[in-house]
Length: 271
Image (cartoon, rainbow, N blue to C red; front, side, top):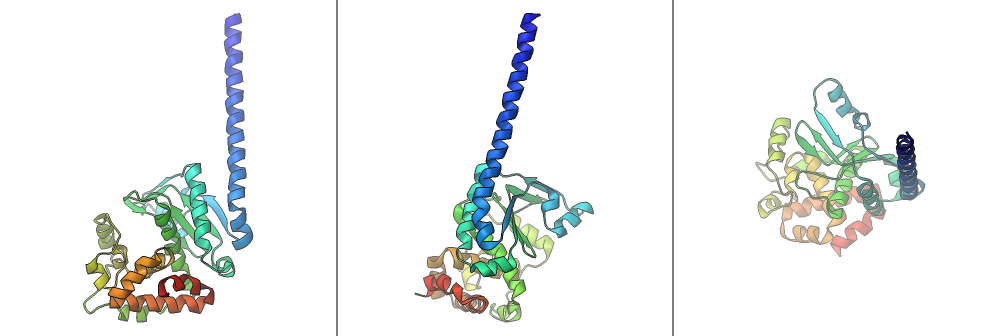
């Protein structure tokens, strides 16, 4: 009887200790989240959230799920990776005027991975929200790739808000060139790609990434992510490929029209 009571007390003590530890861990993670995001909130007015549920996704995705048009799988990000991605976002935002960010970006959701109908997606946007995912099929979760994903998605928001000259962009493509556009063909094309890097054949067509062939928006996005993160690569491309140079100049003009503060980004390429 005494042995039974002793074991029961030991079990209760263990439960209390585990519960206390979990509560402490949750409080500590909450405190760290507040500390990591404080600067984003104060300087840019941005709120950052872990992405763990389908109803946090863009409304178009939620609609497809609710109507059985999409099979969606979300993997939550580990705390350490989540906080690491926040720091990468902070670095990326330093390249933008704070007033511009405040105007066009309110929320960022960060998840581990996102799969829709077997396709792995690393970033999405909706109005003033960006959705970022740490992992993708090629396994590249380097700080460079993660930062590029942010610039890629934010450029879509700016393209829409400031009326990017899309028809003029299309005129820069070589004769006979066409984007894939068709959703089924895009899915098949993306499944066939293991490396998004540009090769000489793509660069001659004015594409700085294999992903740029999907449609005009992703073509523009691919330029922006390269401009904002790999100035030396961009400089090399515009020196050797005439169409790339023309597209670069159009993006430069567009961003400088939005804000002259972007001159420091392009200076790294032009100097």
